[in-house]
Image (cartoon, rainbow, N blue to C red; front, side):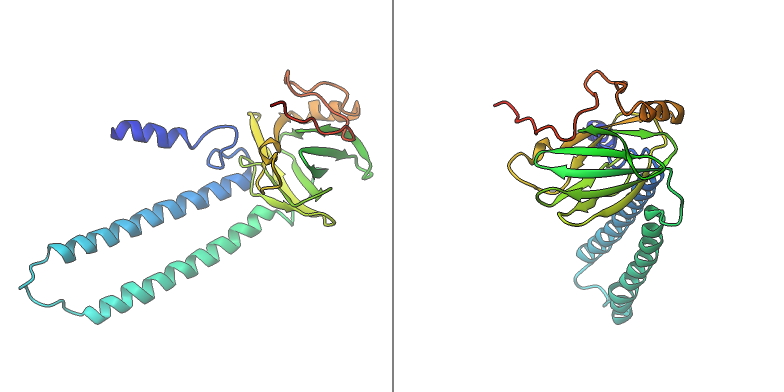
Length: 245
């Protein structure tokens, strides 16, 4: 039973949409933070259970607790305060690292969320659209990409779990997010904000290409099919396809 549960738990840490299977530096920092907090919470829970067992198993006619007030102050005030301060400092430094605001970007992609699809416009060095895709995102390997996200209708949320955190996609506003893909493995993005009855269809696939291959694809205006049978460049102005019942 234990081994089966372990297999299920470990299996849940991988996959095309797992934040615990990072494929870029931002996601790696987020995954490390998750594991740190998970292990720390488990250790604190174990400590509380040990103290609870000690209290319940103690003889009722035994001697009274020594230094009870000191134990309450240390365990109920000092220790939680130190843990929260440490998490605040670590989380602030982690957030700065994830944002990568001080690093130069290699590519800018304009992202637009719509009911019920995504469009991606890839800008050249002059800031002009060089290619566009729909519901598939092409990325060069080992390149820092700045995503400028906006919405044409309602609030969405742009999220590629294997590359980093999510960001809100708000009508009338452009938010930025910087991510880098370090491995050429299958990845999937998803709208993480309920945006209507067909919210579940707001997903997209991520295709990572070597830098030279991506440059050739971009120079061709995105007309060269991406290396996937189901992924081809699409006209961003085309109407959304309604799912069949």
